[in-house]
Length: 195
Image 1 (cartoon, rainbow, N blue to C red):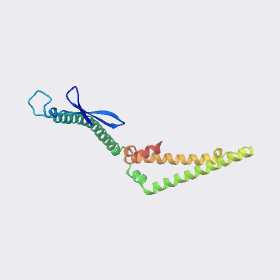
Image 2: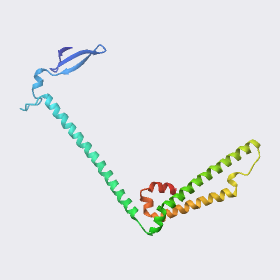
Image 3: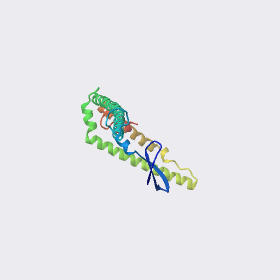
Image 4: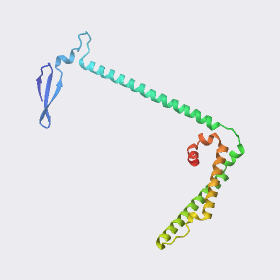
């Protein structure tokens, strides 16, 4: 690297490290390293001033980031607190106060019976689907029309019974749990179940 004096009084060092082309790097002359950039009597060097300006920039940027971040944090904390208050109020809301019905709905027997009915409904849906697919295949192969499984009266009756049982179960849970149904621990599952 060969130092050369520039027009501005600094030294430029040319290096041929990158693909054979000279790349200038700026280096301050020895006098500029120790003298102040302003006409004041401070004994700051250019490097100290540069460091101070850099630290001031970082401090201002951090302060602005903290303000933005603190606004977002404050808003989200306020929203979380408001949601918690509303959920607690709705969770504690009791209009009918049917403690016996609540105990029955939360009981193990009721939950096991509903689980068994759900499994029976799943088997019923699987069986009727299998029967309707087999009928559709035999109709296609034989070009004859047999009575579809879904049009049989027993299928419609059993399906209506399952719908009625699930409707009653949902109604019992809404009446027994009241506000807790919509804002309790399992509120998401309850709303999915209601849909």
